[in-house]
Amino acid sequence: MAALTFAAIDVGSFEVEMGIYEISNRNKIRKLDQIRHVTALGKDTYNNGKISYEMVEELCDVLADFARIMKSYKVTEYRAYATSAMREARNNRIVLDQIRVRTGIQVRIISNSEQRFISYKAIASKDAEFQKNIQRGTAIVDVGFGSMQTSLFDKDALVSTQNLPLGVLRLRELIAHEKLTQQGAQN
Image (cartoon, rainbow, N blue to C red; front, side, top):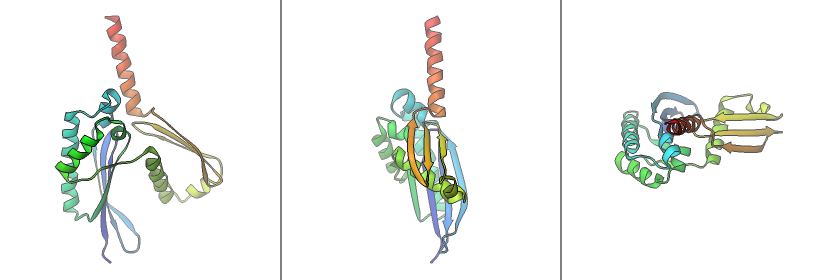
């Protein structure tokens, strides 16, 4: 069996990222490329509740480039996931349809639970100590651009998890909005 070339695309709150991997028949995974484009998708969602036309244009341009790059690597399979910024946008179905029509890439919005599950699997696959660490009381805190997730593990089990909408980008936008409100009140 020949090696499989796989692409993983993350449409996040602050950046769009694609990793291209070669998976051999011996389950060896080798990273071929990593491409990132900063685009503050969450800024629109967290401020206005929807993604602007301009942001959809930029997102489609970036994903069209990703599609060309996948073709150049002869990618045979891919997964494209979107997280909180897309999940919370009121116009997310229209945006996803535009992406599909204009780039050929099918993006799937994943729930917060799915997002965290994928993250924990990634940590476990890269960290030989992960299984050992979650045997005793362990907290994993993931501070993202849209939210912060705290998960508590004990005796090899997830005991509790809590998601708070306190991500870096969301807090930055909240502070900027508050400053504008205060400046307006002073004038």
